[in-house]
Length: 476
Image (cartoon, rainbow, N blue to C red; front, side, top):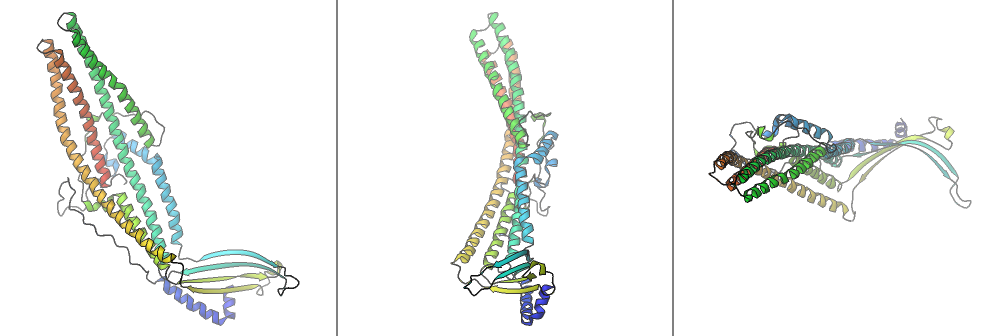
């Protein structure tokens, strides 16, 4: 209302305001000074090294990464641990707070095209000197000031794109933390089951060593053995017994680590499954390498960083061009505050428009633009590096999984063979056909084979979990 009163009294300023408003509206639809973002070309291989060739004509992406962890992991206890970790893990909560922080910046950037409005109440009192030209002044003003910058060169839109990329990047970063968390909990759980199995095997072998020691002592007492045989068997028993405290310490440490991942104080974890009873789901497809652009959160985050850097180039370049700013103010003004509402005499209004072209800024704007281009180039290189690393991670995981499966087969055969050797050595020893050294050797070999089998089975489970993470699974 105040602006209309002012414009009616000032025809020339009204025309000027109309022209500037027309230019500003044209600026809203003007093109930015930078080209739209285009994803860098990356030559993906048709299949992963170490993986099976992808059948042409099949689905674009049928990899294990598309499965949520609730479907990927069959063990109920493990799924419950992962659920707890996702709900309470501190690192993941920090990542989620980063999303909230970036969301605030995005919300502010989305309002960048709207004008700013400030309300102010001001009293100006001037007491001049007796010999000066100024007169005494006591002025009361209540006004509203609105300022708007026309986005002619896309500077505000580029800031909005950059804020959006930053927000989405924090989302992908949180997904990456979640993916790593899922794999870390699974790896820790399988390691815990391996330690449980090794402790159980060691306790059983300790009992077997006690039985053998008793048998050797009986033979010694009957004059069929030597004290050396007793000493050798006692040494073997002591070696097995000495391994138990170390395994118990490792179990406690692994339980503590899992508790911390789950966001709780260190405590004992309940588990009702044995490692060797768990089947490994290693027949799931790995998909195609190009699917990593959609499945790997860290790759997606790297590309969003590139998008943000590209938008920052637009912001920096737009700063080199003229900026059009419109401002309007209006309100009440009187020499006495009691006269504010004596309308229309106390009303005032003004409209200003300015077109500013930077000419000499000591090279700061040009340097900022050049630096933004360098940062964009760095972001593109980082994105390409992330893609290469992702493909390498999957290839390494596939080779590891294949070789662990092959190794596990040999270890299983060796363990079964040595179990039979222990049984046979005991029978032959009782019959006097072999010495105590043969029995001890068979027991040692069987014990080590059982421990190796537990270790390799844990590695098999962990290798599949690593592949799941490398493919980008776990965040859905």
